[in-house]
Image 1 (tube, rainbow, N blue to C red):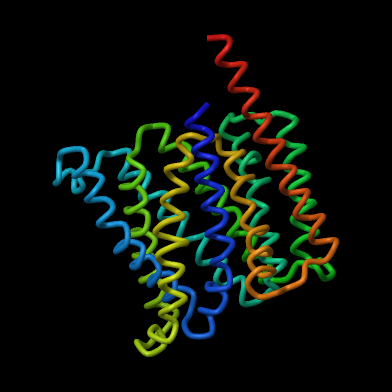
Image 2 (cartoon, rainbow, N blue to C red):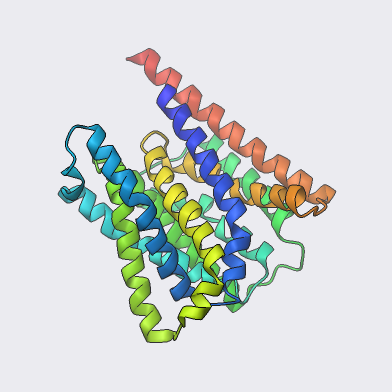
Length: 302
């Protein structure tokens, strides 16, 4: 029970970081292409995580164990890295062809896709969780979509990103339950995603060092916080929280993005947006209460 609560709090921090990073991701496209940007942020994430990895291993009394990688961690790093490359690439390209609000809403559709994909894997979701998902989707729509909702090519690209998000969440759930090392798996996923981004960059883009330097602040912000910190914390937290509830908590990134704009940029939230925030918060709290109840019942039966 305590570990699950800690996991949910960590995911809340992840949602906050992602919500505050969206502006940095959008502005980077003014300087460099999506693949050069993703390569840069993954390199930064590896640099940030390398000393953390070394310190974790040193704390365990084996300073060189950070170079030892077991099979399940290696497999998890490769698969999660490929999914990370897919979601980040389609998101970066998609936001260039659609509005930020629609992109944010469509991306968070992973909260529906996670349980749907989970059904294929035999993971059943209770009726109350489906109610929570419906509440969250309604709230996110009210918060994010302010224009007529029609699907464009950019929207479809972001929808593919949402599919990769859901797949990655389920992959993390699988590999951490199989005993993969969270920090090592996160480090490997950045290497894989960065390598794939490098190949794509060489094929489709011609970035210059001056352009990368112009985007350095957005790269550093996203690389350190969104990638190095948040993606690693997500893997650590999902050891303690079921995938569907985790996806609901992480969908709060849209709420934090709106609140950041209100607090930092003095943007005004309309009544519709406030109601949307309230619905998403209600959905997350209801899902958490439902999950807590299940844990209590399971504990009483042991």
